[in-house]
Amino acid sequence: MKIVHVASELFPYVKTGGLADAVASLAGTLADRGHTVTVFLPGYRAVLEHGHAINAERKFRLRIEMGDVFLSGEVRVFSPRANLQVFLICRDEFFDRRAAYGNGERDYEDNAERFIFFCKGVVEALRLENIEADIVHAHDWQAALLPLMLRDAERRHGVTLAMKTVCTIHNIAFQGLFPRSVFAQTGLPDELNNVDGLEYYEQINFLKGGILFSDRVTTVSPRYAQEIQTPEFGCGLDGVVQTRADDLVGLLNGVDSAVWNPATDALLPARFTASNLRGKETCRAELLKRCGFDPAFNGPIFGMVCRLTEQKGVDLVLENRDFFLTETCGLVVLGSGDKRMEAELRTLASRAPDKITLCAKLDEAMSHLIEAGADFFVMPSLFEPCGLNQMYSQVYGTIPLTSRVGGLVDTVIDIDAEPERGTGITFAPTAKGLRGGLMRAIELHARKDDYTAVQRRGMARDFSWNTAAAAYEKLYRDAI
Ligand code: ADP
Image (cartoon, rainbow, N blue to C red; front, side):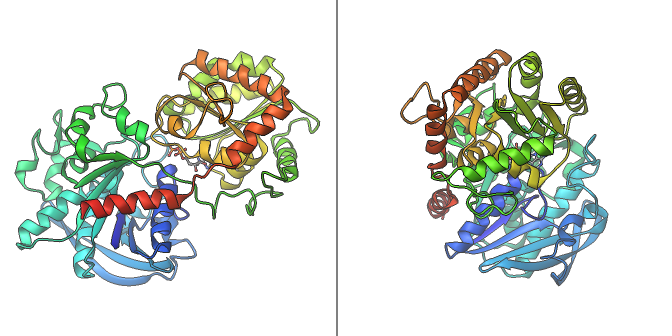
């Protein structure tokens, strides 16, 4: 099949979260399985400066109508592997910036304009490049207008395009909600500027458009596909999602074993496998050293790697501060984001610097070291579309502690619920729930044989992208 992915992030060029990993792995795996894959990405500064893209071919200039003005841009292309091309929609005024969406404190004010331009650039590039795709797969709100724009292009040019469209919701909390005035820039017909179209409580909602007007809608785990149809998890779009229930499916993300494999991971001081865990001890020792902890410390180390946001349950960890201060255990948090959470974690760390630390930055190597060197991985999310770290930690022999929501339910088996199959510890997404999970972790850690058995079961699990990619292939075929 000829498959086009459209996304605002792609590992290793630009990443703020799991979206970048998921799109890169899915596109790469589909290419390896023989499909012709094209990924469209904004030409951010970080991408243009990446070794792969520095010599990207300048394909053609763009002239995009945005309301009553025309804006220029450029399309560049490079090919990082066989069967895979990456097209960059460039316009320096929009994308030559330090970050993808905002400066950390606030989103950029022109995000609507930036991603309308991006989607229109993709439509134009598909036409100029004559890419007759079978599938156009739009990821998240940044690409969600694309299915509508393609159908509109058909109407304008009086043609019928064979391509089918898929919209994937990686996190329904991010919807691309903007003042109604931005509608004019989309160039879409007025009949979409109402409650049956993009309008959402007097605003314009990009994701709503993608959900309503794609041939298929997917999300990143079966449980999350159920949850987003309820008011509790639907973030106001549950009713809209329900109208597409027949065309909605939840397909689990996988683990990219070229990046996340303890037997080959070049970012680690030592490598290891389920049958020989000695390298994991070296990783643990290095982690203790990097954190400034006592090298002889033998209590369990709890690791955490995440954006510091309400979603990730950081406050549940903070509400358990006395646990981490009084119990014989260590805590390593890698993450940045919310300034209040960052300050409170820093204060907590300053009260016990010999066993609690916060590393408030983006650090790919440190994230691998935590996955490999910690004894438990803590993920008390309030909601979680799929989650990747709980899968990485099982692969790395680090037992996950996860709340029972979304993709965490689909990927972690509780050791008490299923003693023969269990790979982790699960709990309700509350401070008390996490507390219970932490206590169970301490008990498990003290029973060495049981701990190792759980660890090995996790390492034996198959989270490969081949399974996920095969599921997407079936979905694409059904749509076609
Ligand atoms: P989300 O997409 O909601 O942020 P996921 O668990 O799906 O959550 O994916 C998060 C990805 O981002 C993982 O690959 C994780 O390792 C990575 N990550 C998050 N914070 C950091 C950080 N501070 N440094 C390095 N990697 C990080």
